[in-house]
Length: 358
Image (cartoon, rainbow, N blue to C red; front, side, top):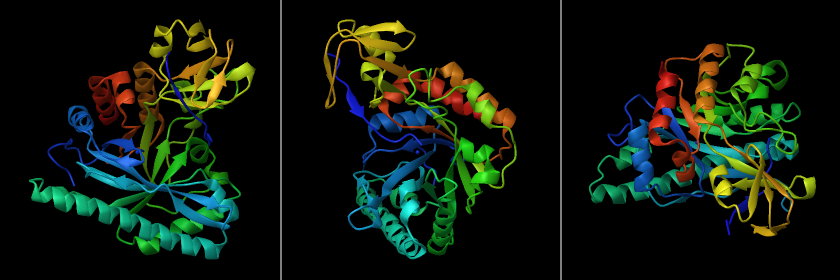
């Protein structure tokens, strides 16, 4: 049986010789729970010319029991970043639905301490590595210059989120502060507001609703992307994030259930015993099948969403045509993962960076 993992979530990443040499303009997101970079991942960085990582340090969510925002899911540190990196913190919008200014003041201090704690763990591993010959490891860990905050804020939470970002400047006065920017926030900046940071990471994916069975590919397309990029200028330095991930969208008995991680159309096509391709990238179950904790039945459907290399190249062309970028603007790919890299191959991923640089 072709076993799959199902995850349901809201839809709302110091230069070394081992990485590229273009001042951190070629990037991946590293969004795992444990930082333990493999030899294969180091090879990917080398061969694609990537020289920067956005590393998820932890999340912040609203604690219903304590009625306060709380850092959760702190990164487990098992190795040292091999190149420039940006500590990254994901914050649910729910936090700013509930938090008062006093709670945000406290949260800012806790976030600062938690970032310092993860940094200290990286440094401990780096010092140990330096004794084994990796002399540059401590300098890389100490050399970070930017911190990223990721929150899909809304009009109703904008003011409290922006207050949080201003508070973080007090804790990181010598660091660049960056914030993720969804496409609707870029297009409708008069409504969403412009975050008080130094730079923004424009997330050019998740462009339509995956819960609709009629959606073709919710991750996006060049045509959909262009419809959002109606203004070229922005108040802050812009970096760009593009998707190399894929997922499956599950519809038991025609109703939305969730998103299936690590789903790939080739695997479904190969497993003809359990799946039949009824239209392009849409599969029907031919037998009752367990997917994660869910029991799917004959006739249930799974839509596989991923973006072709040719379409990503078109998206890069659209971004370069429609958005005013700087010579130091960064392209990051979400995310550094074996299956994602294998889907395109290192040569093609390197080509994405090359096209962005032209």
